[in-house]
Image (cartoon, rainbow, N blue to C red; front, side, top):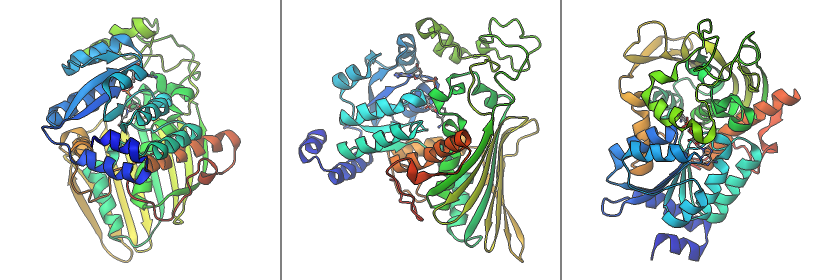
Length: 445
Ligand SMILES: NC(=O)c1ccc[n+]([C@@H]2O[C@H](COP(=O)([O-])OP(=O)(O)OC[C@H]3O[C@@H](n4cnc5c(N)ncnc54)[C@H](O)[C@@H]3O)[C@@H](O)[C@H]2O)c1
């Protein structure tokens, strides 16, 4: 019996989720998975387009591409050298192409619409982070997944880097005893950090603020490393560098009269791929990929500090800064028997090392330095391992696969932090959706 028909007939959640796992696992060359994509921008065409076709083209077949920008979806088809039809209406695409997997790589605030439509059309979903941007949309996704019995996979590529995998291994082997608190600080630089203020991400209504759009990665890492659910959040945040905090501004960089004096001037014309995707398709939607970082409509925070209490009693101090001279993070796990320190510089003005380092210090004992090779492309090979886990999975030794509950728990920290900043009070995670925080979090749920 055909899988889709079987699920419609049984209508049971259990049958649906078990089958959905095995469907991804049993992809065979002679039985390629039918995949469709909605949102054919930078991420869709790259990580989930060219790269999927390169390594898993023998297991999957694109049956449709959809984007609200009618020019960009055609550009994507050309870039991916596909022959499948293109659409600007997801309903028509789902009806005509009947995908088994829908890849969702649109703007964050619209993910829920496409995820729910995909689930209702009988597809499993692979969605980019953040799963969505507010608690109501999050609940709607959880409800739709339950109702349809399909599966939502959330693509937390950060879990797959060798450095972060090693942290997971050490913490879970008890290397520093019981973890009691964490100090976690993430720095975005004046290039990548500034880029969020050029694009749609600069508006809370589209990306949910960087506490959701960006920090979802960081909060997911914490949830995964600590193996627990967040319980309560308190936060501060403000916008005091970008946006209105500058004496001059324009619409976007190309026609800007201030380009000679603006340190944040950026020439999109130097990147042929971005010109093809965005500049050549501006005429369809008026979207400027090189928007001014000083625009007065910017309404997200550019510095954020968050306190999180976990259901297993771990306390976290987290911060995000968006205009640093180098990009990366520093993290310190404090345990009953020692301390684990880690740092990564993703971009820096000094020479790059070919390894990442961890510092493990035992209470009353010695310090050990652990070096992890970082030369593999795509986040130390993490991006490829994530795609493999989705399209041709094996054993999930470090429990890196993530579902909608993981997707929800990570954004709920950011949503709670945003609410806490707005209202000036702590926010309980359980007040946001039907999910109840657990001291030990479920795996791939
Ligand atoms: N995991 C990571 O490290 C990572 C990195 C980059 C982006 N992302 C995520 O990938 C997603 C896409 O990001 P991007 O950088 O490619 O953005 P983008 O702006 O380049 O692409 C988004 C595309 O979605 C289209 N779109 C927007 N709303 C739509 C709708 N309602 N229906 C159909 N199409 C719609 C836009 O026209 C655009 O082509 C985002 O959710 C982002 O958070 C994740």
